[in-house]
Image 1 (cartoon, rainbow over the protein chains, first blue to last red):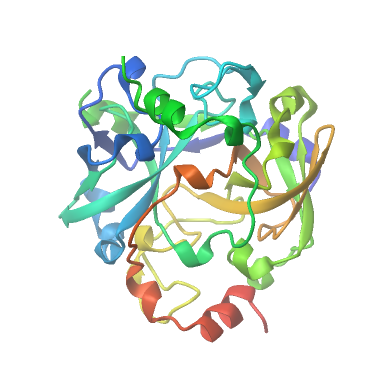
Image 2: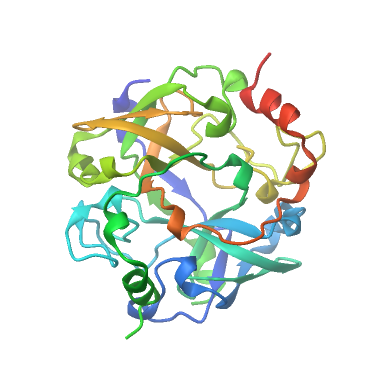
Length: 166
Length: 166
C-alpha cells in the first residue's frame, strides 16, 4: 500500500465512555499516573459496551487510550512539562500532538456494571475514552532501555513538575 | 461535561505515517512485539511531521499507536489468540474492538530523516500510524501486578500462538 492511500484517509472513532476524575483545571492536572498515585476516579463506559468489560477485573492495571479533548492545535516542537528545552513532540508525552491521543496505565480497583473504579488517574474530568486494554507485563520490553532527554531529569524535579504542584 | 456530549461526537485523526514491515498476511502476523523479536521494519513519517521526530533517537524504544486498518467490525466478546475461551474484548488485545486502535512498543534502531528504522515489529505492512511516544519506564507501573486470564497461559503456548507459527 502506498503512503498516499493513507494520507488522504481520515480515521474516525467514537468514544466508548467518559472519565470521571477530580481534575478540572488542565494546569493543575498531573502529567502521568505515576504523579497521581492514589487519586481516585472512575470510567463510565456507555452501557452498550458494558459486555466488553467482562474478565477485566482479573487485571490489576488497565491501559486507557483517550482523546485530549482540551488540547487545541498541534505543534511539532514543544517544551515538555518536565524540562525547559524544546523537543520534537514525538519524543515527549505533551498534549499538542498531530493526533491528540493519550495513554495512561491506571490501577483498576473494581468493576460495578458499566463503571470502572480506578486509581492513579491523571486525566481531566469529562475526558472521552477511546479504548481500554489490559496491562500485561509479559508483553513488555525486556533488557536495557535508554530514556533520552528524560534521563537528565532528576527524580525530585520530575515529581514536583509531574504533580503540577503550584 | 455530561457523557451525552461525548456520545454524539466522533473524533477524527489523520495518519502521520505508515508502517513498512515484512508482514503481509494477517493470519501469520505476530500478535505482540514480544513474539516478533528481531523482525526489522520501518516507519515512514510523512515529511510534514518530520520535525516532530527530533530527540527521539535518545530513546531505545518507542510506543506506536496505529489503526488496525484490516480489522472490520467489532465484537464485545472475542476468543483471544492466546486462549480458547471467550472474553470481554477490553480484557484482550484482540483487533475487533469498537475503536480499532493498536499499541506496540518497538525497538528504535535509528532515525534517517523522516524514516524510523525499527525492530520487533508486529504490524502489517501499510498500517497507518496515528502517534509515536517515547517509551519511558519511569512512568510505568510499580509493585505487584495481576494479569487475569493471561496468567493461566503457559510460556510455550503463548510463544507458539503469539508468533502465529503454522
